[in-house]
Length: 448
Image (spheres, rainbow, N blue to C red):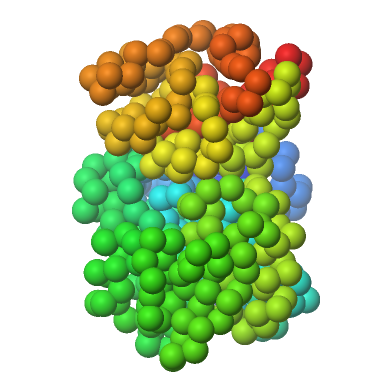
């Protein structure tokens, strides 16, 4: 018997979810609180005979007649006014990944964490593709899970990047292998407290059993402690400690210690990824792939061939002996710390953007003489400048747009220096998304 399902949010995720609902024979009601949108334009993305309707503006109780489930897009906070209307009507709220999982088949690896998710997901996907015939790489990486879920089979493998926003509304979402890469302060404007944020991240394991496993960062004390109490088996990786059981780095070599056996996997100098945090991402991907029965020789070859994901410490160009790197995905201070650490020499940094209620002290302290100048953009520039001054860093300049920021950097950079865009802030306000910010940065660099 077909259901009537409300889909909240008319962006990429909402459209993909609606299309999937229609393919399964159910009826979709697409809802968006923005009453300035045009119904005809939204409906034009579907077939003329599709059972879909559109509601814009305020959601009323009478709109919920016969609705069985609401699928909410990750960008919508659970304290949005219409969510209370759903709760009063006792309508379950599912995330888009929950809907997809409900219909998907095959093995599932799900990856979360504050930083490194996209690189680890992309790398894990490439390893899987080198061994399995049918692989789907989905989620926060840019391809909605609902877009691919109906294509999956019992023999396929899905690798999903999962955000805290998506995890808020799962019910029976159950990965065979999960991974939590790290947890540092982020999205506190939405989750309000670190305790809530941590709990949401850890919920990726909530439906896993003793037969499953979760890959965890041993160097993250919160995750190390969590590994002792969760249901699935813990597999640890560490870039700072030697582990008797798990993945770690001995000198320049990533090794696996397992049941008393030591296996050398790959020398970090063979990798195309810069920085300790990326070596952690590689270890996590290796651990996930190994648990999904990919042979180690296949894993090593894929890891060595993998190139940096766009907007993640991505090399752009060398101009007048200065190398330019795009880390627009560095949308919080911890990610930006890792990018600064990855730069091999003196660095001029472009930063600033939308304020997610982050604190910048630890980031400024991580400059440690490496950052020569900082060029600031956006809403947070005064807040960051004040924090920098408090820590004795005063080589700060403001720019009104990315073009000006890049030109200022070029004028201050000497041969052998590095210019890094790693904002430590979200892109909203000046740019639609971090991808647009990164693309504009690259255009400005190439036109120097």
